[in-house]
Length: 342
Ligand code: GLV
Ligand code: MG
Image 1 (tube, rainbow, N blue to C red):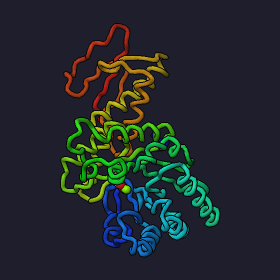
Image 2: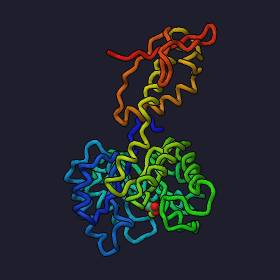
Image 3: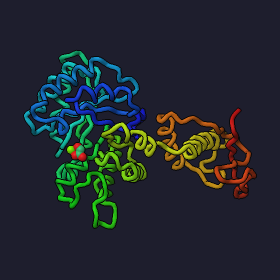
Image 4: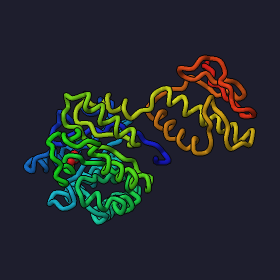
């Protein structure tokens, strides 16, 4: 988790070659929008897509969203002009550059230096523009720890399932869905390995797209699985996918309430009663519970959830599904209350 938690539950891919998609993206409830110059844009349309991206960033109207630019990968002939033309002209309006097909730390070092040169030349704040690194092949995954450590500009690691499936030879054409024949979760290993690398450097972790846009049940299951692991969000390719993904990566109201109560209760027990562990309802809480609660509380606040319960020391806590009467704590332990406000 980043110290300042910016939600990236839904990250909407917008081909920069399409003015219509750019125009409609501004009003959609995605947490992040990225203007794509890479695989959603045909080679002949790359130059016009750069011009569209500059115009879209400069025109503004992206308030409340993170705005990123996916350039072509560092081995292509387009990549340097994507950065030099678009970031030099419109970098002030971009939060991050998304670099696809990162196979090692050298790709990140190249982009970091180039962004630094543009910031120097344009008088921009040094180091402000972030980098999101897309891991989407066997080399990228094998080097993911070094990639995550390659620059202080890094904000997120992003999984690219379509390219990854091709790279490792997965026997399926259904991108983001489980391949037939494998009894477990075929994406567990890359997702978990990337998640650990990301968190070891304080980065966000984002799952990639689910291409069957009408298969809402499949999307919901894929998003729930990545969210359960700890991922911050997932790409979306269509407006109809945004609500499902935002919901999957937001805590439930009950979990959010519980997280805020744990934070309040733990503050009270440590600061007022000078105790490191105490009972909250029928559960013991301690410093590790506080850390876990911080994650859920930050995500709930970022998702706009509001509390309706408050911690009151020394009273019983009627939790969800429990009777209003007190759960007896072990002798000598404190018991917090969540009382309805107002
Ligand atoms: C996205 O870029 C993917 O390859 O899945
Ligand atoms: Mg890809």
